[in-house]
Length: 501
Image 1: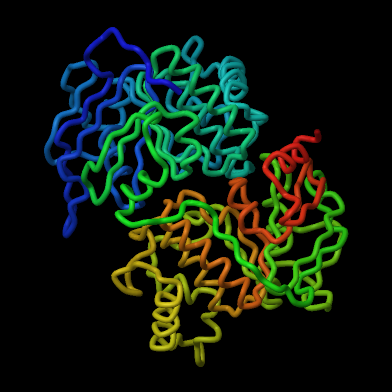
Image 2: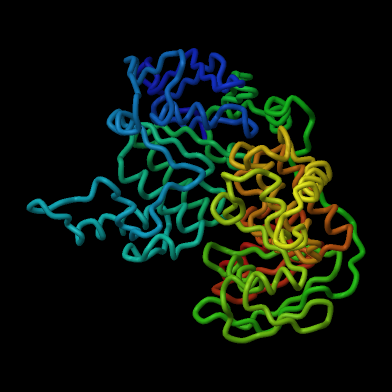
């Protein structure tokens, strides 16, 4: 995209000299950010660089210690989320802020439901929700509860809710982290529609390909400070990665040559009513089998069924040639299966507990004697995981919520490796993870496969699933629609298969 031409010299948003400190750490140290009207301004940086803190300040969730915020040239105080909304600022959070027990329509208009003669006008709320959901390409019934939706569907609902605010400045924090290429393209159409109307978009993403498709300008933060601002047309990918990390990092997904062994996991005729139809595949020891497909195609549902989270109506699961009965996660763990969920903050980790507690959680029985956990064994197990997986933490007693996204994901991996899992189901393993941490997780996945672990990889990131997989299966409407070897797979062929072309 080319930068917009603007008649008004005052930027839509100016943040100058923003400073924010927490006990023991300076999160923001004099940061500047200027966004023009009708511009998509990309904010880049590794986890911990200060992006989220800066956006929390802009959206009223945090108070700055020093600095000035001006909208259309006028200084403004943003003391609360409501004040930010009243100023025309809306945010789409990376960690979704929806109410699970309420309907989609109620979430879209949460706190702002249309009324008629003093009562909520449900019919109007549903009608307007349908328009907004269609705008973002979400095939979701506005009457269903949010808790029944997938992560990707919830992400689209969150985007629809932000659109309902008719914001002048829209913050998008990793909006495509759970979306496929098709849903991402629809979102980009929506962004172009918004910016054509004068809305300014602050776009945060770790997917560099997106930046060059949708962005106008880029500001890079590192360690709470400005590093550079560039026009997208003049930006260089490798330079951007270097600016973010202060080191040379290859942003491409690394592949590794392996010689797979015997079949470790075999799934035959797996069926889940209205969701999965006759799913059959196998994974050998030391092999990565990837699953691609559009939103709702059934990738996550396969992982949940194999791990015993969702009951299946028919089919068999075999591990190392022996059929196993899996009716619960306990059965799956006993069979040597681990599951890294796509939603690490809600389903993968106990954020309020320490790294040690999270790593040891599935093996407490092994670490206990007469019902009492042997703390020394628990600690040594966690410390070994921190070393082997290169988890950056102050120590094993640090709480999981205090870690970056990439290190949280490593803790989830460590938990299953501690069980001795020989089969790993990885659902969106790098969702919301920065470029440097992605490289480390890719390296870990390759190392695990090379050590003989059988890996099933579900990912909406097409370069990721293409680069890591030895074989690739494509889902469409709950069925396996195609299979590709590494040599035969390409983005064009996979997407054509996913949409039925």
